[in-house]
Each structure stands twice: as C-alpha cells, then as structure tokens.
Length: 173
Image (cartoon, one colour):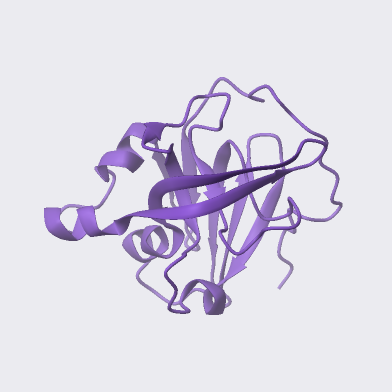
C-alpha cells in the first residue's frame, strides 16, 4: 500500500504568515469520511459524536504540557511554553475507535509529520497534542490557532506543525 509522505520531499522555509484564511482542520478517516473541526470546537470538544463522551471525560482530555520549546526553521529556539490542547491519541480514538497504524498531521502550507500508533500509545506525562492554547491564552492565527506539539522534540523543527489543516488516520487493514 502506497502512503502519501508529507515529509518527502522535505522542504520548509520559515512561514511567518498564515498560508490560508481557513483555520478549520479536517480529520480524514480510513473509510473515506471526513470531519471538519473549527479551533473553537476543538477547545470545547463539541465535534465528538453524541453519547461517546461525558463532560468530565471531555475535560480530562484537555491536557497542559509545560516546558515545551518551539524550534523554528531559520528562527532558532523559543520557549519554554505551556501548551494546552487535545491529545492526538484521544482525537483519533474519538473519531476512529477501530484499528489504525499511524496518523499524518499536515499544515495548510503542506508541511507535515507522521506519528505511529506505537508512539502515541506509550504512557507519558508529555503527550503529543493538538494545541489551541499557549501559556493560558488562545493561540492567535499568526501562532497557528491549532498546532501540533511534540514535547519530546527539542533539537529540530521536523515534528512541530503550525496551522494544522489535515489529520489523516491511516489503517493498514
């Protein structure tokens, strides 16, 4: 099975301006269905299918990860920051509670990364998140509105995705 690789070819110049006026993200499921989610809906979790999630469980899915750094191509390292958002694993499990192997996260300018199921399901206090809040303030459009934060990344800019536009859940079955 051939899988689109958002990292090949890999070229990503610094992009200080939003590449698109559309800030929504689309989650593409293995069965071909797609869900559009606004940044506000991601913060409130009101995209969750009815009956799948109680209010306390929804609140528990919003996590804050302190001491994160942003390593930007051409801009060096900034931080530390505290990011708040939804664990990428929770988003996948809410919308595709079936078998899956990996998730691609791609920005509106085509830059992307991939996370394997084995990586996302490892117990950690610093999970991969779709962040919507930076230091207790909502991210601005220039900051990405929704950005993928990989707290374990501290030395390059290959996994952080600003202006998340597409999340693709991939299943090999």
